[in-house]
Image (cartoon, rainbow, N blue to C red; front, side):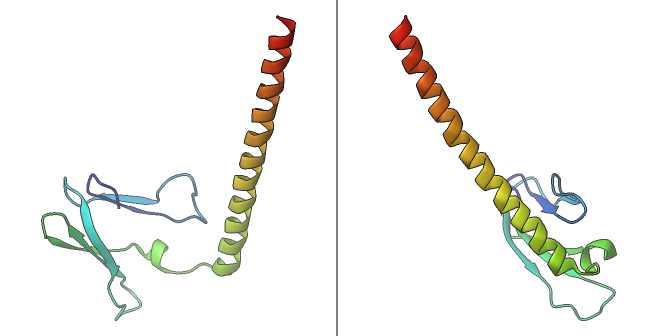
Length: 111
């Protein structure tokens, strides 16, 4: 949920760079979100309370409530790749910082 009253639903196996579904609930903030207990396999409800105290009930699309084959394994691999990517970005940032420092010292000595 965002501060502008939008609920973003993500499907990382489909698109990890953007939300699969964005629903504007109201113009204010979201106060609470809870999955409603699933009474029927054909329906998954999401309760969303907004900053005004209004309760909104959303019915999630079938494509977002049914797990795909080997979803847990695929998500674990996705998360491991993301952790590696973050580590790589951090290591490159440290290396860039060292290179900038060396370049500044070299320019200071030479000029």
